[in-house]
Length: 325
Image (cartoon, rainbow, N blue to C red; front, side):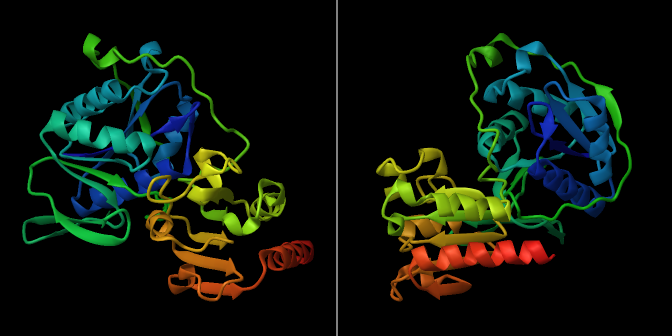
């Protein structure tokens, strides 16, 4: 019985997290000595679909339907569940993204499956047990969850599994699921996307600013540093509440949870609510002039200094390094 992965796309293109999911699904399929089937919903080119084979997909189910051009939680969950039944898949894998967090429990109900959300490692399968390591308590801890149901749904945290290229081209099969009127009650009128910035949940590097920057007029150096590093920009809750930055950049327990390879916090004290949203970061760098700032207790690297002095020097050093490379 194959493993099924849902491959999310944005305007017909797959994101980095999609390749992580396919690589992760391939590894689970190898654990179980079976094949990997991907399902794509929306208008995606044949070339893009076949390219999933490079990351381990053996076959791609292509769902192209005008009614499903925009993401509809209930409808997409029904399609993915129907695909799992069609293929006989007992393990369904998807990204723990904004849409994935809504899909996973719905798919679990439809398949009567156990659900592990926010997985950070491959499941351990030994002695008849299926155990998934996942984040818990808003990212402040990890839990090892045993799924005892026959069918299982796993959502993988972004940046938790490396992308592996271990295949060639995937076979493509058109799939026409039976849509029910009840699945299409929600109507998406408009989707507004930010196309000129790195997506926060998918970012490898995040540069974040806090009240220590004193005002929105000083955010230029944050954006310049982010551009140099190919990073996403973020902020603390007080900053977004004050209107200095959009709420879409608010990182923390009540904002967006991120797990980049590098998180740079500038002028942020490190309140527990903020730390809850960034605790899964691989490396944390803190720049703050207060040596007693709580953030230093969790930082891998810390610089005690005025951000208005340190950050321009850091930008200058990066530019010099790039010029010499």
